[in-house]
Image (tube, rainbow, N blue to C red; front, side, top):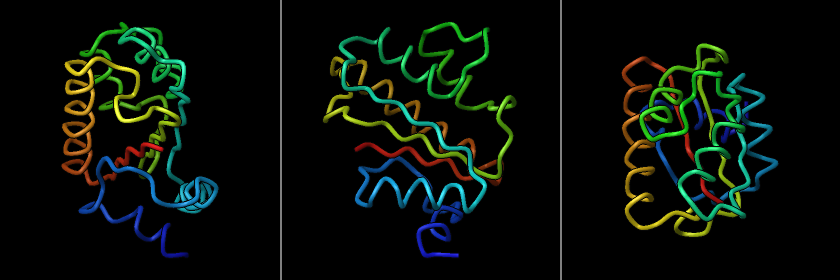
Length: 131
């Protein structure tokens, strides 16, 4: 197993990071580990609603997804429709703000951090990468 795949399996290191590797290498490492990989291109996002819709589409959110912050937190902390030994959420083209207002960006990154910690407590890594 290559170094990136081994690193993805390290629960202690899981978190939200700016991607500093080749996306194809990340995709290959996620496949090698059996992790679910969700990708969202957020280049066109200009609002909370558009951001939530892009994430919902990327994670193949169930019909109960309510397109609000609570629904995002619930969906990212569930993944019962996508069982896997770990999860990778890759957000493309979001820039520094992911197309969100400062307040919404703070909420989104807080949800990512809380969800990473939840999955760590469940013995599974969740990685969120921004590129």
